[in-house]
Image (cartoon, rainbow, N blue to C red; front, side, top):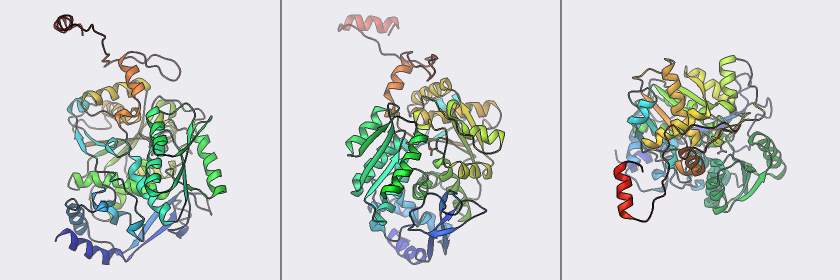
Length: 452
Ligand code: F0G
């Protein structure tokens, strides 16, 4: 079957699919039209998810179609998100789609990092290869497309950096006005620079992520602005594609474990939903376990997972991995469900562990930003504890690009990195630059001595 035929065939089949918004709480499950602007259930306050019903194509038809689309030059097919559009069929019309050809991120082997993590082999799904440098683009293309479909004029988010860069780009591409709220002084310059360059109106607030999220929600409701943080169910739909693309790249052969960093926990929710739906559609027959890794100073999900009960927010979360510096993650009910139903686990890691793991990912020629490196640090702990076997098939999601936080990198390699409380971080794998005279003889001699 060629790609065109597969598409025509599916057009008929997917016309019988209905999309709705549904309350995530099992005791409620209230249903709403897919075009409602909802982030929480008006009845019980629960999180909202997109749910699909009706006739779906078979797993074999879908697999074939996704593969055929790799030969196509059509914008939707060349997006590593929209290529999988039958797996999140919430749009009624493809003309709403705003795409920057997101996704299409590689699976990378990294033997050095595997050894460091106590594994025979590791594969990184590197989301830092996205247009704005993080996995947020996978979700933002869907959120921005839904904003267009709803006729929204303005979109807003609070961000520790990556979401703002992503939203600014997609809003600009979609012709929407972008309003960005950032914790003042706690965001990397690279990310702030992107928001400014993409033309977003950027407001810095003297408060932390959790506090600003509450502020933005109030403003969004008052001013009729569309919210594009990860409790937006369409962001979650788009982020499912990270898992779908990874499975497709592995010929639908799931790994034993998928490891990812946890902040606001939107990505954990998306990964779990993607795996369940892939299983229900017959695309996979085995469920990987999810391992979520948090930074020690911002680990409320870790505490809840191991101690039980409700989530106790961390009032003043602290970590140099600013992307996951979140004390009151909104998506914890979904994330808890997903980690538990995958028989997975949650781990936490120190600033030193993150910094060293990050340097090892760099040494492997891969590189990532600090929150992403929590994955390898967590894997090292989980293999040492016997939770992940040495010969396990492990995919770790590197959520952001190495250039997110160059300041962090420079300080680590020159022995100047300190934890938020001022403790020194050892430069275990340091690689500091050396000043040399403009003299070939001297440089040759220094190189020979091994002193540079
Ligand atoms: N990794 C990176 C690079 C991130 O930017 C984020 C979140 C996470 C991991 C955590 O993902 O929140 O889905 O659990 N960054 C957000 C932001 C909060 O504003 O860019 P999560």
